[in-house]
Image 1 (cartoon, one colour):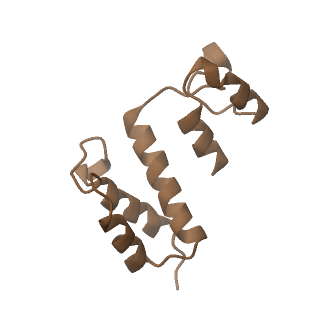
Image 2 (tube, helix red, strand yellow):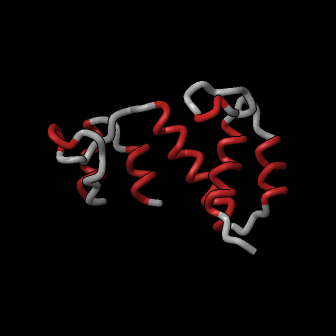
Length: 105
C-alpha cells in the first residue's frame, strides 16, 4: 500500500526527500531520478486511488453494500470517466477493485 501512496505523492522534485527517506525506487522516472519520482499520469492515479480506497474499505471491514452506500454520498465520483477501463465512474471502479481484493467466502 505504501508504494501506491508514494507514487501518488512523489511527483515533483520537492518530494525527493520523502522518496529518499521512504526508499521509493518504483517510480516511472527511472533514468532521471532512479525511480524516486513518479510521472503524473491521470489513468495510473485513478487506478492507484481506487485501489487504496478499496483497500481501506477492506481494512476497516466495511462490507460491499456499506462501501457502495458510502460512495453514494460523495459528489463527482459517479460520472463516467474516459480514463477508467470501460469508461465507468470512479465509484464503480472502486467497487471493482474492492471485488478484486475480496476473498471467497
